[in-house]
Length: 432
Image 1 (cartoon, rainbow, N blue to C red):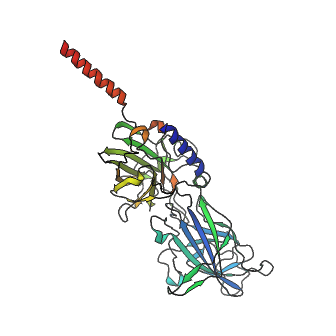
Image 2 (image 1 turned 135 degrees about the vertical axis):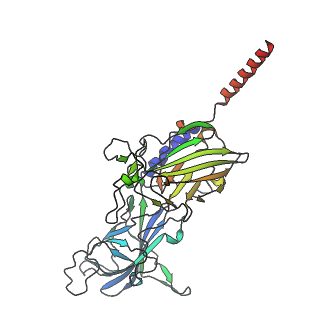
Image 3 (image 1 turned 30 degrees about the vertical axis):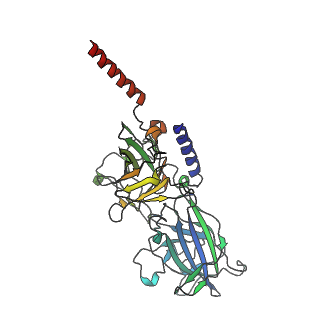
């Protein structure tokens, strides 16, 4: 019965993830906030902010690339805290000073840390990286300001004209249409509050299926009470021999001609050949059982020769996550997503110790041990109860082994019969 329940849960979890719904973070999104600061007659001052309101999914290198389409012939005259990737055709402006960007569909990228102060604005210049809500809420947002020329009279109506077709330039994200919200309030001294002229929001959500048709991680299992090690399922992320399934057999990375990122793009993956062909493997080992507690060892291995994972995180769904007593070398925080249920836990690395998962090799793994209290009303080693129901790495759900393959307790009936046979045989020898 337990195995059937696990199968049903996995099926609906995979079905939901294809349609941009994450049951572990149902309200997670990235919000673009567009504040109209002032109307200067021919030009408009705007502040654009990007907020990552996702519990555990962060934006990593090469970062966001915000795009939109102007409805008229607007041009960006100047910008602080970010820059347009291309200037476009500005030949209609004959003066010495040219606009910052004349493209109909501009793409805006973040500036790097250490940018000169005269090019900065508050909360800018993070190389496009946004942390998640739980890992570091102080770095989940980015802001830039711009001044743009209004569209010609024939294109503009009353009020402000919002752009359309917003994009984040991050695989897997799709953005909705802009909608107006109450004006943003702000203060300069903490006493007097002011508000902008108008505020419009755009909500962007993530779909793992849109980001990549193939999964990016898998889970293997083992337990102290069973000698079987259940590996990642075969072809979890790809199959060797299929088109596009390239991998490397050797650990000698010095011999590899690794693809380096060009133009700010992410490096192409160079995966160690395996039966599962996943860049990331998570191993869950039920290590020990005590009277009141039980211990689990978690190991995350990077199978990618070309990519480090900075600010990585691991999210686990298990009914005992609310009873975590101690985590030895990771940060940990329970996630309360569904009412009072505390069955979701989030792990991430300790700053300057193991918050970066290095490329595949001798140091390409991080691990911890977790001590959990036994809840006598729920705890069991039977029917695979001690293994997670769902695991995600950096916000992407990992492929789990089949519940039928989980390590199981030795058959108690078989042990009892064997013991009785031993006793009867001993008595028989005595009687002889």
